[in-house]
Amino acid sequence: MDNMYKELTNGLKMPRLGLGVWRVEDSQAADAVEWALEAGYRMIDTAKVYKNEKGVGEGIRRSSVPREDIFVTTKLWNDDQGYESALKAFDDSLERLGLDYVDLYLIHWPVAGKYKDSWKALEEIYASGRARAIGVSNFHQHHIEDLMTTATIKPLVDQIEIHPTLTQEPLRKYLDDESIAVEAWSPLGQGTILETPELVKIGEKYGKSAAQVIIRWHLQNDIIVIPKSSHEGRIKENFDVFDFTLTPEEIKQINELNIDERLGSDPDSFDF
Ligand code: NAD
Image 1 (tube, rainbow, N blue to C red):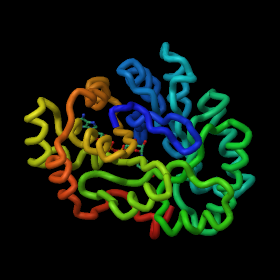
Image 2: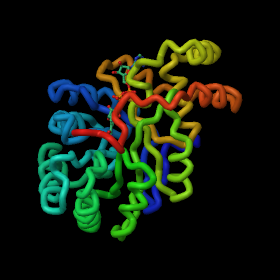
Image 3: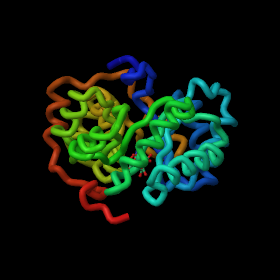
């Protein structure tokens, strides 16, 4: 895992650790992105619905890191699902970002009756080269199996809620078997689990915070991870995780914190 990139099945190298920007104001996003790129991050995860694609694009342009070294993900929002509307939504995202391609375009949620048509649009966008990879988010196994009845390209990534209290082992096993890269959203449990005594204690051993221990747990489980922060110090802290290694016993101890508890909606019952 010590490699900083995960190779997707099409050969594209995806950074294993990126910055998530949900709930970062558009006006703050450029600073956050610039700090992250300075700290060594090479991936930014945004979405149309986060309303900060403009700020993300500005941060990328402000930084001295070349565009081709940065992996940008954005997502198709639920209201835009369907073939024609997805094509248009993608163009609009590129325009807000001020980019001529993204690295990864995801269907944000599996909107019933629509995601297969949306996927046709994503396949076309991928063929045009304007998204270097395409994937899904919040898809359970059955959503992917259903999608594959009409898809010609298998999703390269599934971005799902994963943290120590929702480890999603069965879905991760399925995705591994299908060679679909696993990416965690709310990897720090939205900050709610950072005082968990077991995590704090493991951190003390290495001189690391609970957040850093959790990020390391994701990485060592082959999970791509996108912790969010808009504070310069925390952005740096969350990237400073490449100088220690959790033992197999510690990984197991963290796995055992699982209580299958979601912070977000279940993809089978979301209502937005
Ligand atoms: P997260 O689990 O990354 O937690 C972020 C929160 O943890 C911060 O707001 C802060 O309160 C705290 N925090 C972060 N670093 C810290 C540190 N070093 N010390 C102390 N506290 C710290 O939460 P998230 O934003 O929900 O998830 C990360 C990213 O995942 C999002 O920003 C977004 O890009 C993506 N996401 C995607 C979906 C989806 O449906 N695909 C849903 C939610 C989030």
